Length: 305
Ligand code: CAA
Image (cartoon, protein in one colour):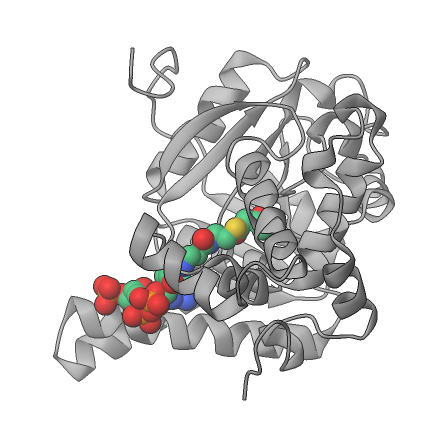
């Protein structure tokens, strides 16, 4: 069949309560699309300042969506208030997890931090609670190394794309231990928040990043060789291949550090066998070491003011 997930049992998701760890761009986006589709969300971060920034980020995204839904300003405000009322911004993780049916992590892309998070949550959560990661480059199985054997039946991956409210795709990842009914629930959750879902194996980069990262690195290598300017490569890929952003605009958008650490991790991973394709280019390494990370630091391949 050409339809993804054709063997997934299409049922209604049997729960409403979700906790998300990490209130960066990804965690905020996942909270927003969940709350916009009737889920009750706890958005947890260690840092109150990060939660305040998250609330602002969600608010500005909801304003864009509300303006498209209606020109009536009162209805726009009602919509925004209703969605925000379903998100509880909190630093109290214990209480949040105890009452949740699904926990999704969107914290920094560091394996030890993710492993420790789920190890500590395992005893607090109900035995029924699903444990999910939004990792873009690590193996799901490795992230859940330290949870109980029973919990390993209830783990999986939900890989969203940035900006979450706008990007339609969701990669749904099944590990060797994920029960089929759990995978079905994850897939159906994705459909319920309006995403087009694809089924992925638990391999580094899943589908999109396994193709997108080598493509972005090849662009950097082309620049490094002096074969074309960053600007011309971006223009070429936008107007010649129909990409919404060129590779350097996308690198600045996603963060140079993110792409650099993903490439480095894969290059050093023995299972991917030193793929030359993902060898981090030295230009990328130098920019990252100099703190030029893209839009978030004000400068990457381009200047951002
Ligand atoms: N919330 C809600 N809506 C948003 C939004 C947000 N945060 N950001 C953009 N939009 C909407 C806008 O409202 C607009 O909607 P309409 O077309 O209905 O009016 C639409 O998106 C286009 O936005 P803009 O006109 O402001 O700007 P644009 O045309 O340049 O599009 C973009 C912006 C959607 C980001 C587009 O450039 C794009 O698709 N870029 C590629 C993004 C991409 O490849 N993301 C994947 C990165 S890889 C990744 O995420 C995985 C990883 O693990 C690293």
